[in-house]
Amino acid sequence: MLLAIDVGNTNTVFAVYRDEELCGQWRAATDPLRTADEYAVWLNQLFKESNLSLRYIKSSILSTVVPQCQYAVVDMCERYCSCTPINVGDENVNLGINIHVDRPWEVGADRLVNAVGAHKTYDKAAIIIDFGTATTFDVVGTDGSYEGGVIAPGVNLSLEALHQDAAQLPRVAIRKPNRVIARETVTAMEAGVYWGYLGLIEGIVSRMQEEYNIPTMVIATGGLASLFSNGTSIINTVDLDLTIRGLLEIYKLNSDQN
Image (tube, rainbow, N blue to C red; front, side):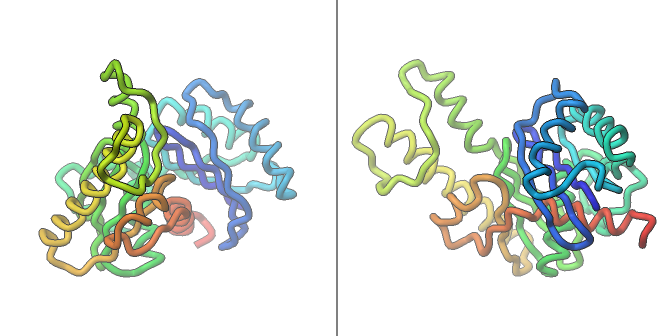
């Protein structure tokens, strides 16, 4: 069985595959102070609900944009699963796609994994919107090549900055208001974030499609993908398993079994 791990700035996702079958998926807050033993205890408790155990894991693959977490995750895999993860950030890992940017080493591992997942699943040119700590927009060519993208502040990051730096503005949740024109402060903030962010999404995607000049489908992923896809027709599909599926494909490319 394969343990696929995606360490993001806000959340870390663990998924277990038996061949092509996804047996389970779990999410935890990313914490650079968490130890290998803490990961193991937490995962084993969750695995029990799906009749799984860390001792069943025979191989693993890791994608991380938080270097401080890498040691503990690798240590957990080596000590509790007796396997060293394939690390998407390593130079010798074959992604199966070309990276057409000036500094390929600067592209986040998660963005490249998403490109692999999108090419394998949809096999057409695409724009991927990933709603994370940052919101990223990435272009994938018809042959799966990574063509570049955009990084914007994430929705939660924008809301938190508004609350922190404006003394009279409260902390609010993200939701879709019924109206754009609000009549009190909280609704005004909700409308500004939601409808303003939709404008950002539609504007960036439209400009990307015009500049790239090749028909593209638009894929949304990440925790807030469903919320924003309900407000615009520019998003064609929501795929919350895109990153994990990309990790599976990269593992298959690099494992000794193939």
